[in-house]
Length: 413
Image (cartoon, rainbow, N blue to C red):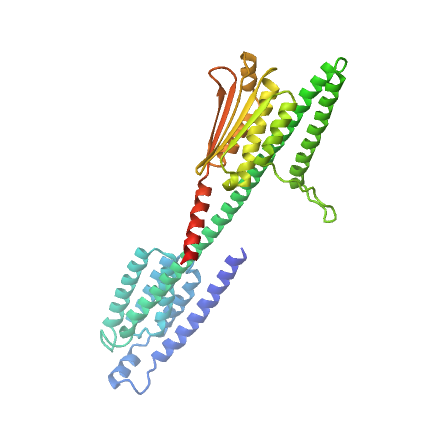
């Protein structure tokens, strides 16, 4: 609203200034100096209808509406100026309104409309001025009128191009801002999913261990108190480990006070798989672990993913496979990939249905594997039991090796 009002006031002021300028210039042109020839002076004195100055005023006042109707205002200014020239005046200063109108058309209309308007305006003014001019067809204002019209139209087209470029830049900036906001939302959603997955793995594993050990303790409490005490000790250790991991995850979600020292617990790595297998064995699920290859090139994030996949798989076996079950965990690492395989020898349809339950464990493992460009297969084995296998490529490891070789070559040079 404010911008439209400011443009309206500017156009009124511009129209007033242009009208005054053209009127003064037209009066001066009607009274030539001694530099003009005698025949030209006599011709001008004989062709000076005073009412023709009204055409100049109308041409200037029409510029008030140049933004609203650029083409009609150009037609009006050209017609009024042509009538002024045909009445016997030399349209020098009177052409200023035409120049402003041509500029407006050039800055608002398309290139085709701009070119057509320019040619039509030049032809009409050239003919109207040359027919009745004492200076002839190629004298007087016709010598510069064509160049001035072309310049006004070109300047308007340049301004239009500049506006278009600016509008494109603004649009790109707005689109980039929307993309940044969308990326921020995507990262927030991804972080929420990651934290939910971590919480699920930690809580499910700890609660499963506690549940199994509590069942053992209740079963042997009267007959074998020593074994019950061991089960209770395992419950205490599992709960302590679960609380430690929960505290480490929740510290990410809250604002820690500057005076409070946050708990600093490292994320689980491949080195903790031995402790995980031992804890699962102590919980009543004998677990064997085989790790081959060099873990030096595996990133900490991938180590955490491997640990959580093994943890979730063993938790499922512990919860669903029943008694007298053995689990095997094998982690194979080479220069191209990390392969994790977890198998158990649980038997019977109940164990199979439990593995295929409605939980999010397998879905979470697939998400972890897909985050590194890998794939995960989970399903029953041919001879009974369950098998989970995840394969994650190590393209980044190969890139690191190549960079090290390249840097070593540069140093040798």
